[in-house]
Image (cartoon, rainbow, N blue to C red; front, side, top):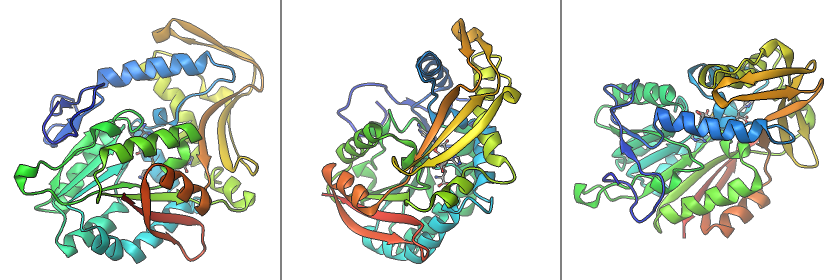
Amino acid sequence: MSDGFAQGFTGTRPVPGGGEPGLAGVDAEVLLTEADRVALLRAEARRGLTASPKQLPPKWFYDERGSALFDAITREPEYYLTRREREILTERAVEIARTTRASTLVELGSGTSEKTRLLLDALRDVGSLRRFMPFDVCLPAVADAAVALRRDYPGLNVKAVVGDFHEHVRFLPRAPQEQGDAGPLLVAFLGSTIGNFDEAERARFFASLRLVLRPGDWFLLGADLVKAKRRLDAAYNDAAGVTVQFNKNVLRVLNRDLRASFDEALFDHVAAYDSERELVDIRLRARVAHQVKVDGLGLTVRFAAGEEMRTEISVKFRRAGLEKALRAAGFKRSGFWTDRARDFSLSLWRAA
Ligand code: SAH
Ligand code: AVI
């Protein structure tokens, strides 16, 4: 196991970065190599495409194009989440920096790390920040973010991590004591990506995160809140159709990486808020009965006319539910904030 990573766990071993194409010149730790990624895609696609109902995990949206499409969604007028979270971060970053005095900031599902600059600025200004670690399943996204941040934050040690947060949280980086860099760790999980987890995944994630943190470390969580169905349906069905492209991108990933023959034109994007389960259910619906060959899996997948395949859920939260889940995992609340419209929440938790 490589230096700087939490010790004492078994399972997938981190391999030093550098060898992966696309990471040249980036200080990186690769927990999920390209070969691992394809093996995981094969396993998860086989399971999901042969399940009833069919489903695919949302992580497979995010190749380079999928990450760019998500970034475009955040600028659509209906997709309020990113703007609301940025509003809270703008108001609270200094308070978060003064409270945590973190020396290492790890960002899970970091994407462009654009909003994270508010935290980086505040932590730099209080003088505690030494290291930033963007962690994402999408290698091009994390590499681009690392290059831009290294340029814009001279003196900051930026280490990119390529990994799957369902699998690799147990390898979260620790600052080696001998570098005199043993201040608190702050793990940020922004954008309401936690909403893409089901209840069991959420509980497992909070528990494994708590295990890897030490008392005195911190967790910052961005989570979207329950609101009117009209606004949620609009946010996931933008008029410009960017979310349609994003949802269908998973079919391109399967076509390229598993030699599948999905035809995007034969599927409709379907996204609707379910007010009983308090989540947006996001699917691809077959327009007509047809079959799709997935050569890489030696599989033929049959779709009935109107059959839906789930590609993502986006859970919407209530404060009480979030507090219960985090307390159960061993976190103590330090702050809970919303934007002025009370659309989105940002909460700070201390490993107790
Ligand atoms: N945090 C950013 C991006 C959110 S989009 C923001 O707030 O705008 C979700 C991000 O999580 C994408 O960058 C995607 O590549 C990443 N992601 C999705 N599933 C993942 C997984 N299983 N492990 C690691 N990263 C994942
Ligand atoms: C990344 N994740 C939190 C987004 C969301 O809102 O659930 C992804 C997304 N899916 C459709 N639009 C945006």
